[in-house]
Length: 614
Image 1 (tube, helix red, strand yellow):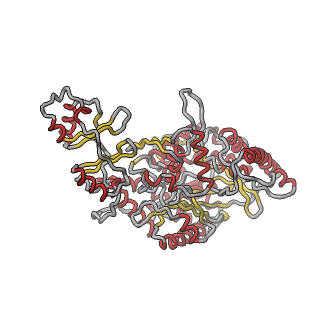
Image 2 (cartoon, one colour; image 1 turned 180 degrees about the vertical axis):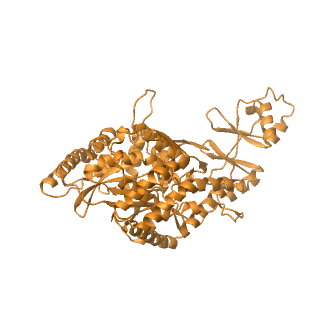
């Protein structure tokens, strides 16, 4: 999330000054490109590793600030939530040992943070979305207490004027409202950076857009969210919706999402992309800036374009153009933001080598992508990859092909040539691209999670299944074998789980009645489904009562075809919340001599816990 902008006041005076600095930065960038000041004689790679912190029960552990303080290494920084940490890797020149060196540094950094985390009773997991995250860990008390994060939340909420809405449909469906942007914290990624010469930037950027669909399809690792099986790469939908400040009206009007793939092929220069984003998206953050970038250029100083960099960090293109300064020299790079974290370091490095090889080996025939492919085809390919993974059917240069076939037949040969062009060590090329080839045949992290999630649910309750799944992911990561070699989770013994909260054992797939239903329908539904208690909702979807078999028996003489459910239901219902302790729920059942408790968030029922569950 970049710098912490601790000195910002977010005042109107600061905003007015920031706007002018932003305009000046665009002019300064264009002057630097015209004057040949942007570095163009070297190619570097870099990466950012996001990771999840979990406790002994494999649930989110909000200890990032303590761990970052104790690890005492500038490579580590905070993320939105207190159960996430980011490690920024050093840049490496794209040449013989670059991937081996980066892999060694990544392993070293992970070992270092793991050692510190262990002292806090915390484990480190690499995954696109942590399966054990629940709605409970998405409250403001889990937001990292840094002004930048609070400001983003405040401004986006104010712009939207309503709660954020998440609606994602896959094998299951998730539909709910949330009062903060913290859903973004569910997403953890392995962000890739590639330095690009300014005169080749547009050709490279259009190519990187074109290959995004099949590259994502072979790297999917985020199929589960809040116990729901959704997209193969659910992060793409979740990230867009969690930061979506667009206001929906009855009028049909074009609105560009702050998180997105883009709207068209690019034509002129990287400055044009920045101009489009400034023209399309409101300024989210500001900061005090001492000197104009144009003034710095006049004085012979390389400007950092602070206003542009801050603005750009709040526009979340999946392929984001970036400006930076390293060793006193300005450069341009493309940041790949759609690759998920995990499943292992070897998988991540394989993804990195594949992507860099594709970029470096771009055949000349793909220099003019607008003449070869409609932009909406590339955009649709990306969406298909996110929803269906490597088995998605794409349109590739006029042919219908699955992602795995495009990877095997079209893209891997390009990646091999690209890495060899920069004299990358042949053993690293074979080792890393061999992982991609084997994964195209054997399966992605998303496929492994889905298969085992479904099998575990046949043996145990949902909460136990996602804990077992997360535990197995962690164990496989420790031996660092690529995901296509992971074995199914077999012979799971019902281990002694640390059940503490009602939400861990409650039933969530509920039969429901409505106040105006007739008693004969209620009786039939209960008989058909062999259930002895059923919640009753009103027209607003709120819990209005509870109907049990014993209550129906009490009104045996009444005409069931005439009596409404509202006439015979229990209206004063004893309820609990998802975070009610199980022991408390047991005592409440004993005290009131009841066999079940509806589980509610506010006035809405989200589950039910019975003596059978206990």
